[in-house]
Length: 103
Image (cartoon, rainbow, N blue to C red; front, side, top):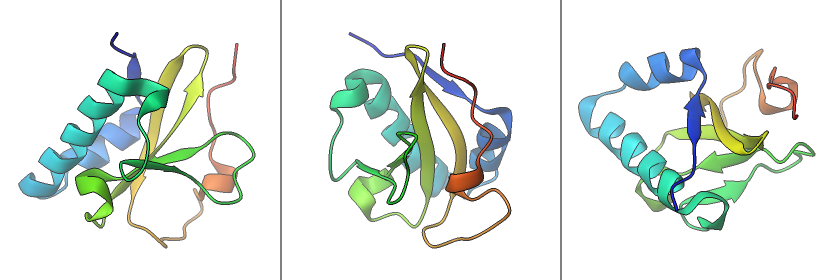
């Protein structure tokens, strides 16, 4: 069973600006997410600490890549919101992300 993964436009654009090897690693991780959905576990994905909204991070190269993509389940699909490096802080931190509403 394949899971529907939708991209936030900003996230897709950011991933397309990554170096080729990193972009391939992210896209490979997304393909695993499409194939396994919520069953994809460590080391490929993990819960974001402090998230009460079910936000998870997708970890390319089984966590060996410096890049992450944040995602969560929304209305039966998995939405990739934005890519980031670990420990990066910005105005769009995971706690303040403007996610689509469930429903």
